[in-house]
Amino acid sequence: MRIVIAISSVFLSALLFVSGCGPTTTGAVMEDVTLTGERQSLKDAGINYTGPRYSVAILNFNNKTPSRTLGIGEAATDMMRTLLKEAGLEPVVLSPGEMSEQERLIELQQTGALKTGIRDAAAGFDSVDFRLTGSVTSYSEIAESFDVLLGQSKTIIAKIQVDYALVDIATGRALVADSGTGVNKKKSTKFLGIGSGSTSDPALRDGALRDALTRSLKNMVDALNARPFVGRVLFVGDGDILIRAGTKSRLDIGTTLSVYRMGDDLIDPDTGRSIGKRQKKVGEVVITGHQDDQVSYTQRESGGGFQKGDVVKER
Image 1 (cartoon, rainbow, N blue to C red):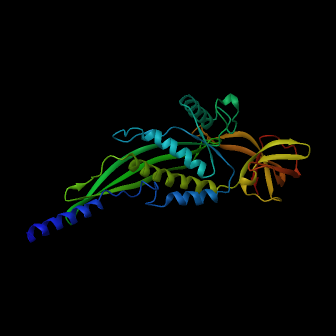
Image 2: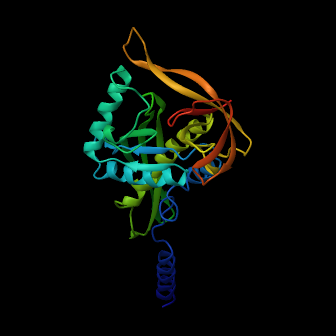
Image 3: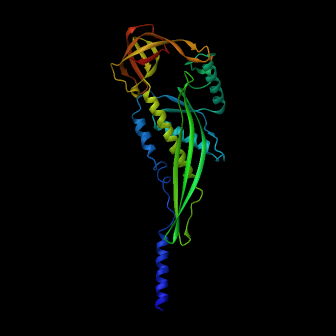
């Protein structure tokens, strides 16, 4: 009788223990990138971003994974749009037709057949500063199993690689061309055959994808922050010269900027591609105030004959 009671007690204890041994998940449920902390790094980089609010055209990310993982390209495009906004940039998603036209425009600009830096309605797409292209090139899930007391623990690790390029529309040159890798994992435990094993979980893939995109975008933000301020003259008249800068540029009132007139394309005779434009300094302006986060008031300090479209740079 005592033996039966003892066995029943052990079995009851086991059942109570099992009730606390269900599957546990880490990395994807509460925060997609808790494994690396990259999301917070991006927010910090976005807060410290000192340039103008550039418009970035996102071309749909290609799905080049060997298994053609369903929906991963579309998910990457949607996530990147959100991350760009968080970083202090202005995302612009182009349609397939606009993307083809954009590619053709870049090709013409690089060969010198079309002047660079001109982005009006006739060009066939909205005014953008940079073009972001990318591909999800690999996705894998690795299972790791460990035997524990009276049970088994299993962890699935998802890894994703994203290749990307951030291209300056005005020159057709890539400011950044690199790859980023993301990691996420899910853990589950079985005890005495009871519990749940790791099953297919879209959040596992999405967490790794967001991690890879966050790492990639942080590199882009760092590269943009390293660029000296460059803006454009928006309006000339009544003694005021309005430029694209604003409070977002973090330029102080009283800052002096040089003004340049863009000339002909400089074509490399060996490649036939444009390597820049002839620039002529036409004067200097000083910031007198900010209209909003994107527009600043300036007045002439030297030179003259300023025109809409002239380039302004830090001295």
